Every structure is written in C-alpha cells, then in structure tokens.
Image (cartoon, rainbow, N blue to C red; front, top):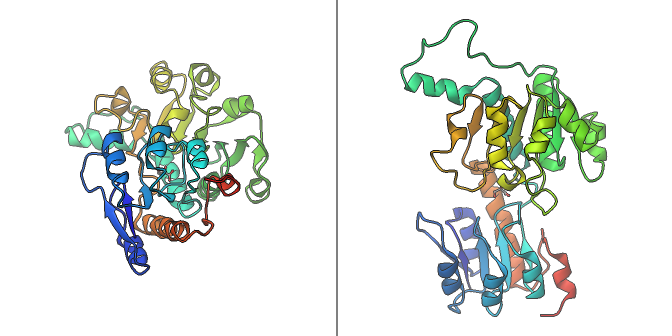
Length: 329
Ligand code: DGY
C-alpha cells in the first residue's frame, strides 16, 4: 500500500508504516504543494491514504480524491484547513494530533509573552544595527509580568499548560473566557471564568488558544482592541485568522494595546515588509508552536497509527469526524 504526504514527515512514522507494508511518498519541494499538483498526484490511483501537513483540502479536492483515498491523517491539532463536511459526506475519516503538542505550543505562547514584555527581538535587532548604546536609563524599557493577570481566550488543554507556566513563573492570576467553564482549570489554576468583555478589560496578557471557527474568525477586531488595557499584551499561538491583523496594526500604532506576540499570522507566510515586524513591542514567529524534535516525533507517530487504522478499516484513534462511521459511502 502507498500513501502520500504533503510535506516530508519524520522518519519514525515512515519506519512504523514500512513495518506494516505501507510506503510513504512525500512532497519534497521547498515550495508548498498547489491544489492542482495535489489533486493530480492523489488521483493517480497510486495512493489510498493522505497525510496532510498544512495544505488546504477543500470540497473540490475531496470530491476528486474520494474514489482513491480511504483516510486523511493530519499532522496538526487544528483541522480548519479541511472541509470536514465534504470529507464526512465522502465517507473519508479524518484524524488530527491532539494532546501531544500541548506543552510545546504553550511554551511558545510563554516565550512570546516574555519576549514582548522585554522587547527581546527589538533589542536583538539593535545589536545587529550597531545601536547597542542608543538608549538611556529611562528609555526602551520593558514591563514586569510578576503578579499580573493572564487572560485566556479558549482555555482547553494548551491554555491549561500556559496558565500553569504563568502561575508557576510569575504568580499570575488566571481568568478565562470559553463557551463553557473548564472545571479542571477552575480547580488546578484557581482560574476565574469571566465574560468576554471582562476578559478584555482585566487582562494584562491575553493569550488566544481557541480553534478557528466561524464564531472565532476575526473576533479580535478594532472594537475589541479598544476595550483592552493600553498596557496589555496580546499573544496568539492559535490561528492567524482569529485576529483582524490590519486592526491589530492600528491598535498598536495608536497605543490602544502595548504589544503583541504572534506565532500565527493572516496570511501565512507573513510578508517581510509587514509593519508588525518593525515594532519594538511585537514578536513574530513563523508558526513554530509544535516544532520541537520530540513533539514532531510524537505527532508523526500518532498520525501514522491513525493512517494504519484507517487503511485496515479500523476506527481512528483521534478522529475529528466521528459521524463518518454512521454515513455509508
Ligand atoms: C497545529 O497542530 O494545529 C499547529 O498549529 C500546526 O498547524
């Protein structure tokens, strides 16, 4: 059996599948695979499974590949890049990689928070520009995090780790806004469930950890930034589209909020001339939330196990369209 991966995947996954007589072909080009290339390859009749790493899989692709592909295994926890309804209607089970990346992603949010608070990227740039001394005792200062209030938008498993890190390191108070309460967070972090407006008014650091859905798309917009503290820091390690990026740029320029740390942008990749990259209180990373050796290894293992289960007609471990099993292809 042969499966196709839209990027190169870690060796452990290939070894696991090879031991089960499954060969993985990969897209090895530096440039991301296009819709046409993907459709052409996957409809060649050679492949029965598809590993998706970042590529957008819309209804048109699903329709084209449904005769060949028995399972789609994502190497991500987010699945907003897949038309899940189309996959379900086509009878294709789809899996993601939850939990194994909680620590790495939360650590990225924590890293960005500290980076912005002390203008770390900006100060690094000063050294590169030979401006080490271009400062006085009272200029270019950062902000303290000790005892501040961390607000979490979408407190799930990643937000829980972020909350723990912030409490342990800086004794931060944790407040959050979700569709429903998170009893584990209430208990382990002594977190307080608040309305969206209260979250905006009270957070010193506001960290976004929600999934991208129609309800969360550009929920952080101009009106929302006006309600946040002028001294606040926005952190986004979830999805770029949760934030209205032009409105964020304006809010920072007008000093409606103090800073922002982004591991995700809209669009991705961010263009090198984006004004955010020049701001002293902004830190941007190129979507590296899960990018540690161990985490990528664990994601690949889970994705490979899901692939094998799907190809042998078994229920996937971490399926995101459970209802596919009650729909006949
Ligand atoms: C995820 O796993 O969803 C990460 O953001 C990578 O896309």
